[in-house]
Amino acid sequence: MLYFAGALTGAFIMALVLIVCVFIIGYVAIAFEHTLKINKAASALVTGVLCWTIYITQSPVTETASEELLHHTGDIASILFFLLGAMAIVELIDLHSGFDIITQKIKTTSKPRLLITISILTFLLSALLDNLTTAIVMVSVCSRLLNEKEDRLWFAGMIVIAANAGGAWSPLGDVTTTMLWIGGQVTALNIIKQLILPSLVVCLVPCLIIAYRFRGQHISPATITPCTDVERKDGNIMLFAGIGFLLFVPVFKTLTHLPPFMGMLLALGVMWLITAFLHRDKDAAYAERFTVARALQRVDTPSILFFMGILLAVSALQSFGALKGLATVLSNCLKNDYLIGIALGLLSAVVDNVPLVAASQGMYDLATYPTDHPFWEFLALTTGAGGSALIIGTAAGVAVMGMEDISFSWYLKKIGGLALLGFAAGILVFLAQQWVF
Image 1 (spheres, one colour):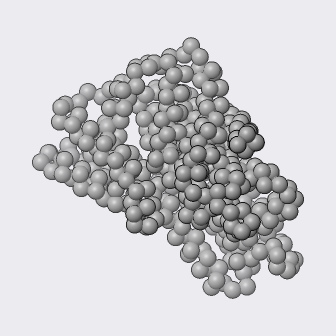
Image 2 (tube, rainbow, N blue to C red; image 1 turned 180 degrees about the vertical axis):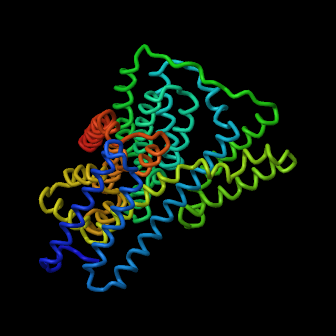
Image 3 (cartoon, one colour; image 1 turned 180 degrees about the horizontal axis):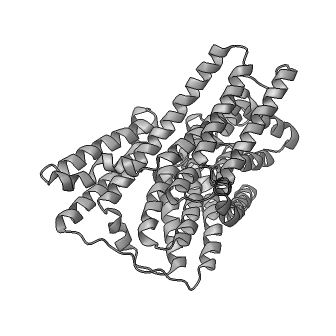
């Protein structure tokens, strides 16, 4: 791996400038997807491959660079398998009209009340599941409740903010918080105690602003698909089994210490068995409508490829040493724990927060910042919530972007500023807590 601490040769500097330029051009192409009429997945894949091509061509040892690529690909694949499994389970529930049970329980037709209800549910569920899975589930629920495309976009944007805020305060809710927990930088009880209120504020500030925008507006009651008693029973089974297995994933990880995608694949496999059991005696043509194969056909594959391209590009910057170098520069220039945390949080909206936190864990040891030091808690808050400023800043945002076909520019114009307001409000609450207690 290359670091800025080494000799900055002319070739190295040129390669660094080139890889950053390619990364920026790729992000611009993604941002103007609809203007250019080029699918964001294509731009992301080209960007990711070109970044790695630049890195490997200037690497003194090609074999080492190839091993790094395979290592990063393994990490990326684990996220993609997790995403694929979660999406397939959600589609299975939807095929069986399982979400109708939830929509029937939500009686309000007031848009502001519905938005607040969905946001709070997302915030709480994200802490129990994770922000990615929760975002997928809640967007699926909203698609059953809302008929207008514009309404679904606003609700989806709020779900991204609420899911990321909810994941920040729980050791199970966001990958970066989990990393800090496993690394010994934070303890589970303390991170919950210190971040639950700031995270809630991160969620509530944009939620209340959007709710005010919707004041006086109502939605049409959700249309429930007519079904027989058998179909209703199957829907109930699939809903509770699906949600139950999604909740089981973090438990499985805790018990076995296997990566989360293994628990998700196990959950999908068991759901497959349940589906086969439910429809084993039914007409083959009818049962085919509810198979896992049909659910997988409905999964948004381009979005998964888009996610892969983005993560490949970010991992190339990480291997190049650009992210670690950037973290070092921030530390040397800002010389303040909270300013560093804010900068890393804002940066996590552009590049993935996982390598940023990993770089921070390598830069700051436990001797300088012991377990449960405010710096680690603040870092969990900012890198967890800061990614909401851009739709491609987090896995939850990328998944929602594909599910509701949200454009980069629409999210930036309508939701990004609100996300930053919530981000700033959460920081102020955290600092106030530190000052008072």
